[in-house]
Image (cartoon, rainbow, N blue to C red; front, side):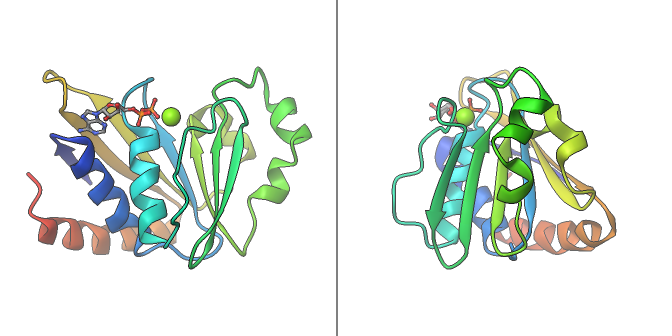
Length: 159
Ligand code: ADP
Ligand code: MG
């Protein structure tokens, strides 16, 4: 599905719409350039999962973990040089059946990700506050779930 937002708040709302349908074990890749809104989107997801701690960029720490209605791991692989470093961090253990995992720049580490995953691609647009956002399902289960999500996003009334 493709949509667009015209404010950080709208991107958070879209993240929250996704967050409300997430289940333990889900992996969501956040793709897009610096400043595209990956962390902003993650804040919306976290809010919908009942996370009350402030959600900040894990760029330097690589992984932030939050306790919400579901446990959430928020990963940013931007500063890693290779897949081996991610492996050394215990990434395969972070992606766990019990929690939701969000991975900023996760498209760079696709070989370490489960086949069933959702990619959220955020792109800067012409206006300063406009973003194009595409949800790309990988694996059979996410295809149906994206259709359901599309209906709930339509109900948000975003353009
Ligand atoms: P990333 O994690 O992709 O580097 P951030 O979410 O940290 O990006 O930063 C996005 C910046 O762009 C924030 O300062 C945010 O307020 C701003 N912004 C402006 N418009 C939007 C929008 N429509 N969606 C998301 N962020 C937006
Ligand atoms: Mg970020």
